[in-house]
Image (cartoon, rainbow, N blue to C red; front, side, top):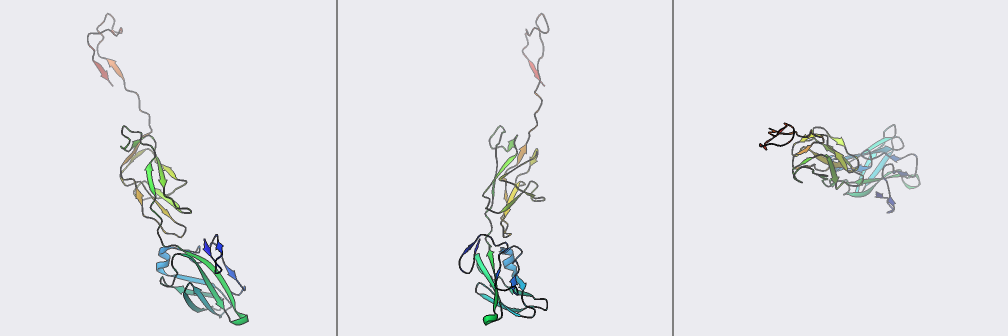
Length: 238
């Protein structure tokens, strides 16, 4: 969300532009009108259209750049990290001409440089002999602390391959996963990526039903070798 120059709340910045003339306009900034920490650090080029060869004054927060449209009416104004406003809603205003011949365009841009919180992850159920041995029949991993609008990913091979997450969980296939190899991370809509969270202990998922063991009386010493009467009570487990 951003606010326009009249402090009216605008629910999306994905396609916001206002102009007083078709002669001038401002293109989307940073691809989606959200500026991430990396984008701000590198500096941002604001581009747009105006009357060919016209002088254009571009103001973003407290910084103003003057540029000139080329013969095709395209212009660019470069803003450094120090010239880009602090986190939050901002507006860019482009102006050409003066007096009654002045035309302006406005675009809302949201600056987000704070990294998303690190997600949490935990094994839903540990069905092994111990509730903390990491051995389970069910490989369901619960993911928490997901930010609204963010996308998240998980990996099971220590970051070699990442898979987009859905909802708030994912399921491990059968197998053994080394400590720290199951990880999650999230990226906000400005492109800022959180640090990685990982399972601190190894996990083994075993959902295969194993055959029942066999049990046999070693020697049946009764009148019949099948009457279960014996002097020797030794059994063999197989």
